[in-house]
Image 1 (cartoon, rainbow, N blue to C red):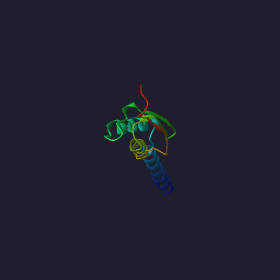
Image 2: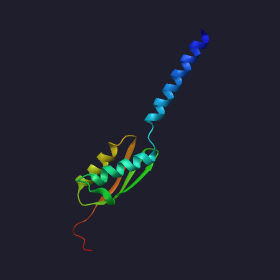
Image 3: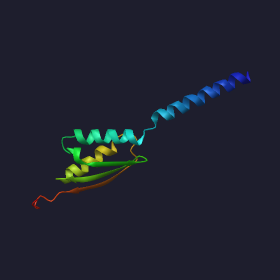
Image 4: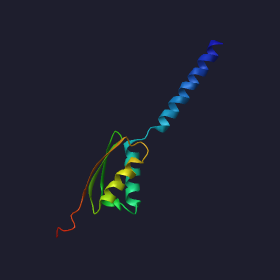
Length: 99
């Protein structure tokens, strides 16, 4: 009887471990998903933005033309599974500066 209970508990622990491992998201996976979201968004048009990930913390860098693009980029990044925090270092380009 004890061996059946131990076997059942062992199976339950293994199942919990598999479920927890399945929910874990790597920084590489987060990076890919953030890049896809930013690049495919019609407002952000974020293919040129830099994305860094460290332990689920996303740092966005680069420049955009409007505040709404900056805000939308942060919102998109926050919506990616596994993201714990977003540091938004995106700047707004000055349209009056001639290049």
